[in-house]
Length: 268
Ligand SMILES: NC(=O)c1ccc[n+]([C@@H]2O[C@H](COP(=O)([O-])OP(=O)(O)OC[C@H]3O[C@@H](n4cnc5c(N)ncnc54)[C@H](OP(=O)(O)O)[C@@H]3O)[C@@H](O)[C@H]2O)c1
Image (tube, rainbow, N blue to C red; front, side, top):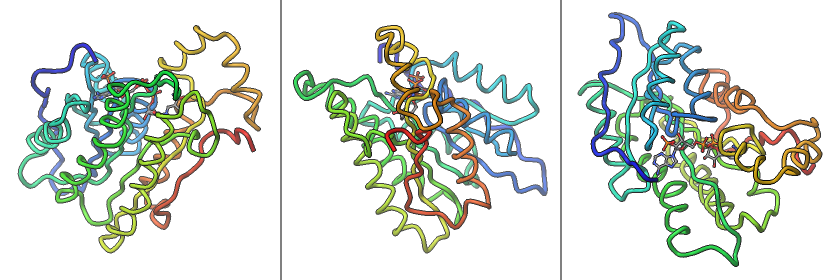
């Protein structure tokens, strides 16, 4: 990342109307792509949403503006999750925004880096960055936010279908998502007594800015993704956001420790 924020943009969270129990969600990496769609969907479902960004403050502010224009509540928070103190910075910014008595109800670990190399090309530096953003940040963000996550809350991680499908060209990235799924499984057992559910959503190829760059670089990639999906198309961000919304809802409360496949039946 070239331009990480020097200080978190901790806008004040929109006030909760007196006497109402509005739930609050934090969605990491919500400045664009899948995370932005999850943020907008949770806001439509009535949650007040903390829209986290790494370097794209304008993207996060556009997401907040879209949510607000649609009648929802949101605020932006910046933190570079590749930095060692990234989870701490984000936790401090969130706590400052929601106030000393504030709580979190839904934590979505979506931020991720994925333009990865295979075994022959991976460098120690790229490996460290992949694991910092995709694994270390969710672990330490969870550690720091558990005290403010309400009993009955939800933790949702965005994994990838590459933990089920062998794609050696993405080996190190797949390793990070494997670790994330292990975190989900173990954590679900640990926080279950508090009524907190922990699940992962594992998308296949989803049409986002990132994949559009891959489509442009490899004209056969989109056709390949359509062909391997039982449903015959590339996924959309709302395909993933709908599953996250279900897991965040009361209807999703009896599902925990699971990885929900969101690949449109790829490689069945
Ligand atoms: N798109 C797919 O086909 C696909 C498939 C399977 C799984 N996934 C997973 O889905 C998630 C979202 O993917 P996407 O395609 O929507 O990605 P994207 O469009 O590239 O967006 C990635 C998000 O993560 C944030 N982020 C990246 N590095 C960060 C850092 N160092 N610190 C803080 N935030 C950082 C970005 O923030 P800034 O831009 O503000 O820096 C951005 O908001 C990822 O975990 C990815 O692995 C995606």
